[in-house]
Length: 116
Length: 113
Image 1: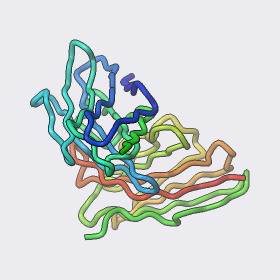
Image 2: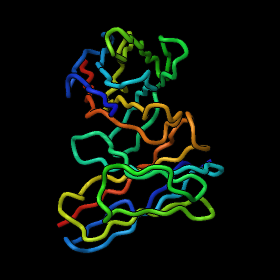
Image 3: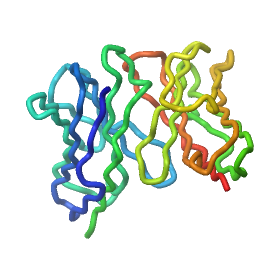
Image 4: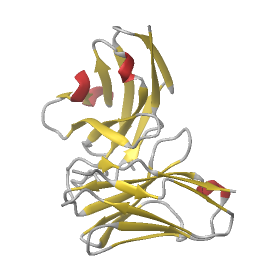
């Protein structure tokens, strides 16, 4: 079965610094991968998705992620953190060979803290 | 346009009781998925419904059931509540089944005492 592992439950960066949130996947076939953000007391919002087109995926709010098959990774980055980026971030994978994004398996999440 | 709405916002139940959670998808969306998010963890897939048919079920006991109505709204029912059912229940809708963006509602916070 497919799964994702997020390394680091908490990440703290200074405002203006690089954001790097790590996600590694386990799947028997090339997966579809997603990053979501969850602000306090809100639902999840899609940041970006990888669906086997370009390996470098650009999302909203300046975030991007690179699919690396050799490393089974899909890390999320942002060149310069902003205070408004403080939130919980989830990596997710869709079930193989289904072509659907409606039955996702999520990682345990990484809480991003941004300090002045 | 209104987003995905869920009701109620918060709910407190006692062990052994039954609960019904409701979800209204974005207008025009025909697929609804339900997720359970226990505090400190990622969401876990429970059900997907598309065009009123169950399209997927996660690893949850039969105490959990759901349905989708002709207007594409959905209900999640949980019987014989356990303390471990305490969680945030999220509903997400998509235009149709496929690689379409899921839009999540704010969730229903269920506390079982």
